[in-house]
Length: 491
Image (cartoon, rainbow, N blue to C red; front, side, top):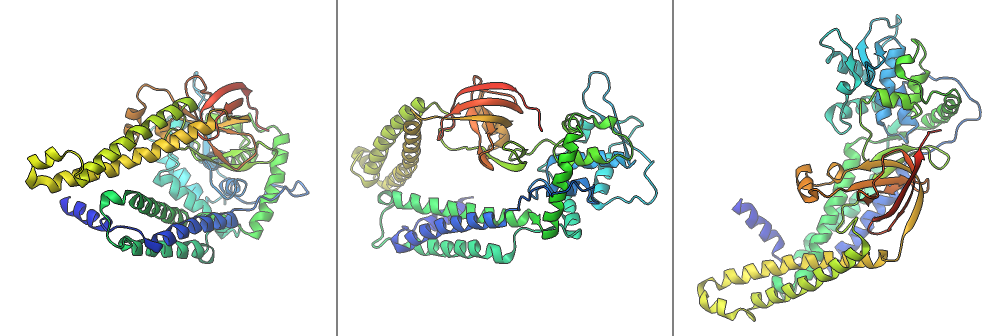
């Protein structure tokens, strides 16, 4: 551990500065801009329904789920596969017992001759068989999987492979598309490394705190950009081919017909053998009865399918974790200003101690440890700069939101506790939150495909899937007023 600390100190010890640091900052901004541009270029198309109604095609419900959900597999894809396997005789879905609202599932052996399972369908069948240890049907909740776990990643990989084999899907990220952001990011990293000895003449740490913070912030931004690029490549995202776009148009037409036929409230246990329409309705997000009785996978925290605005689309949800988010603007303004004032006084004091202009008596008393006193004071001066930056941001956000609000009317598509979506470990978040009630509320009004969740206290908390009118502050995300106005009936 001491050797690691020593290496870290040796790496950050040189004074950053010079033109190369400025070039690194500019290249970092260009890298983010290029990555944003290629993300838009790689985004899947959203075709309109075909002119004619068409008939059910040969794709599996899971592949249809991908086609009609912006080339992304959602939890409905798993539920639709189970319903489809039951319609084909591979499984049986039984009604709930007693007061339970969850269906029961058990294997069956009445599939039609010649009906073969696709790889992802076989995986689902094996998932159920592995848990069928008695003669009793399995409650669907016992079959639930984690959408961030290894089983789900394997299921998603098999579904995407089936879409590629059918010629409907292809890899979203090609080398030609991602080359630009990768090259710019590498150049920015090289420029940052060259800036480490940019201080001429060398400057003491206590006198170069601002430059060091800019250098560290730039490095962190570059590492985040590298992670985002690597994550896009590692997850194997897909998009539709020309044949996939045509198939999606026809399935959207089928979707309209299924809406008119009233498949939304139908229970999966009431579906007839041989009728695959409910499975496809579940794949396209129409079957509320299936999602209630087959809770086999919790909805993704960050992705949601929404039909608000007239046409279905995949919505991405952000849960900000920046300083002061969710605070009342007046509290943020006053607290930020107090923090800045105290932090500036502390920084000046520790800087004077590091230079020897303050606490001379301490230096005189411990002459042989003067280097240790200077180093400790320098470290405290560096650390005290952080609350200055945070306090300035919180105070600015509070001032901007003090007399500013936005009002939205729409559907609450996600409600999550901070411990569920925080980048920090759950145990840490629970200790930080304590007994204070807090809830992220994401409301979709059809205006954007990216929704920033607001932070609600117990007063503004609402259940998911209700229609609501919410007035909140745009920067701090503080909900001033929330009025639920009823449950949503999709389609």
